[in-house]
Image 1 (tube, rainbow, N blue to C red):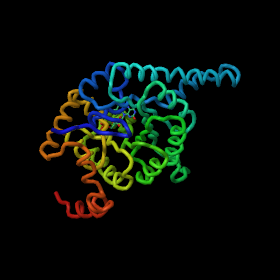
Image 2: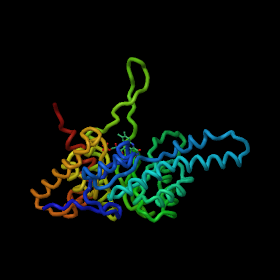
Image 3: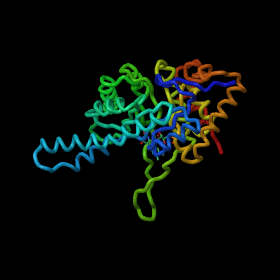
Image 4: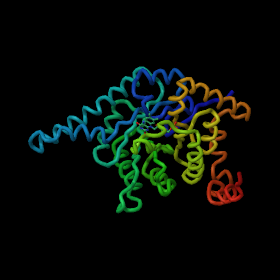
Length: 326
Ligand SMILES: Cc1cc2nc3c(=O)[nH]c(=O)nc-3n(C[C@H](O)[C@H](O)[C@H](O)COP(=O)(O)O)c2cc1C
């Protein structure tokens, strides 16, 4: 009988289905239902740097710089209070690991906030520094360095595992992942998903296209986990993006992941999809004779295929697209 237990970034999970940061995880009542439906862990809705900065900034202009600083600090701590209460409420009613999520961009102040979230009871922190890089004078590598600087500052003050959720706009994710590992990150999630803009051809204005992901987005995640898990093996990986079925979890684990973060599938199909995914994963394991996830984790990563990256890049491009005809 298949055992779905796994360890991700030092957290013991009953199964590899983590519900990822989103509106699905913004209340204790919703999270309790996700736990009852069989989720292995949850990542709370992110607390956003801009949200806090905006609220703190709106308090400026109230007299002396000292008064503004004081008010700014008050508003920041107040904005975090909602998040702290959420962690405490969830820890009171749920037994699954609770990962707090911080969406940060500058390396200031987040160390204090991270410490506060840890003290509130978060079992781990997930940091995301998602941002399009558009400055024409930006130095190459400065965005990647920002990840490392923020991680270092947060690692200096917290003891819980720190997980980095990366965007797919990095020059070389493997170099960054290696540096994140060297600086103490316990886990990496590939990839966060940018807001997808669209253009309305009637009003000639910008609109928002697919809020939810497509299953096709899984392939890029599988590729990078398969490469990164071969090159930086002592780090825990999770796939985020396009995980909809138990077979998708199988693919993630074969590529080298220890867990998956799932969001769009739950929005689309409801909490019952969690059980369906786990059932399909168990059935596949039984058919293949695997009793644990560890027995097949990384079985189809770049190293297992006998080549560091060849099967995932240029030569395959020539092979598959070279002779493609309708
Ligand atoms: C409505 C919605 C809200 C989201 N909010 C957050 C968030 O606060 N923080 C975050 O890191 N990711 C957020 N995400 C991204 C998801 O956590 C996830 O990484 C992404 O949707 C890809 O996974 P999926 O294909 O399973 O949806 C959000 C996604 C959606 C659809």
